[in-house]
Length: 181
Image 1 (cartoon, helix red, strand yellow):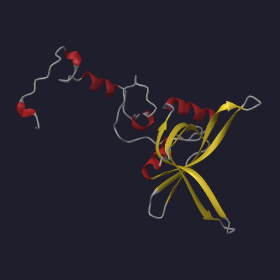
Image 2 (cartoon, rainbow, N blue to C red):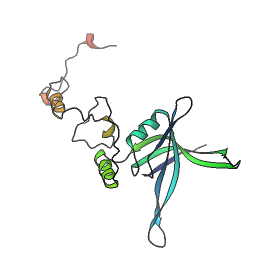
Image 3 (tube, rainbow, N blue to C red):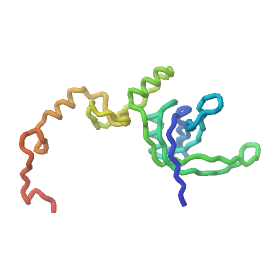
Image 4 (cartoon, rainbow, N blue to C red):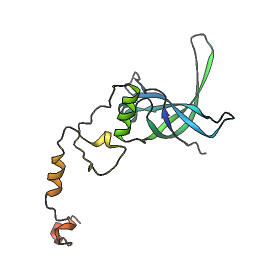
């Protein structure tokens, strides 16, 4: 049996992050996915797909996305039912997200937020992961520590390394005693 869903679209609202009684994070959101064709009026219609994401990925997703963010999600389609306050059975169909990808750079995300008038910014990651500035990466919001001065990256690249191919010597001298096997 195969039950895989892949969607690319924009968030219709900020992720609603809640916690279960056992402390598990759960995020609920809706993604707007444009259809591949236009209607008779020449306009593109969209489908609004309900999604849910669990645990640590839910917290990361809520921290690094916001209304209007271009995202890709992968997961499975699931149906469930419950009885509402009036005693009626309500059926829900949603995508349970396994993986997600941010499809905008940090600059695009901040520009979209400034146009929408939203002042909410993603939380800063306190890890010291660094990505070179010339590399364009949509995940730079997660790994680039802005509190470090940009000269710190230059200091690391100027240090000599036995593995640096620009050092003029392309070979590395390793004895048998250096090998772990």
